Length: 305
Image (cartoon, rainbow, N blue to C red):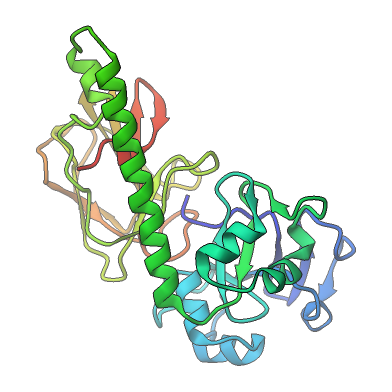
């Protein structure tokens, strides 16, 4: 839903206490942050009144760029929002499936030994792997390179999906019905907004997150009927819109800051339906975009041009 999976973070409340969710690195129960500082775990921190990037940078000993990059935020920290703070400068990587420490280090161009040392508390020691959905700290200050690597990952995944689609079409000797064709990339969708893909489809996140600090409008990817409008009525989505496109296809647009349409309204492709925001369970301004085929959540990249 646009936030990290909290499997190896220390949740920190307003009183400055914290506890580990899953791993026994710290005793369960309240501890002082100053006591926790030697422990290499990622903090899940709730922004308090008076907090700023400068103050948090000084308090936790990490750069403003590290805070901004890992939380899709600029200089505006919203009181009550959750942000993620590593103990040193770096990129918080969320594993997609079981991944080897050596592979992650090679991908981002960092020292494998240092990566293993920094993430020992969440790494499987027998084979130096991380479980799916693990937060791994990649120690770096080169966020330009991190962005380039992440963009390549998305592009490679999209190319793989397209290759699989072509191969499957070639194997079929029968004509496809309209519904079958729509299950691939013939749905005629357009992109729902502008920005960069900050997170996409995986076993733990069946959607694509598109971030943009400018908070542009969100548009219908295809014509249809607004089948639902959520005002914090579905846990985590915040303000959200669901559009039924027929042929079993529905799209969902969540974390909006404003909604321009109402339930039952007909919309055309490219029509503005709301504004990007960060409502519900959200970190940083972005769109949480889902595609559902006959009720099942599917990979949005398979449908987008």
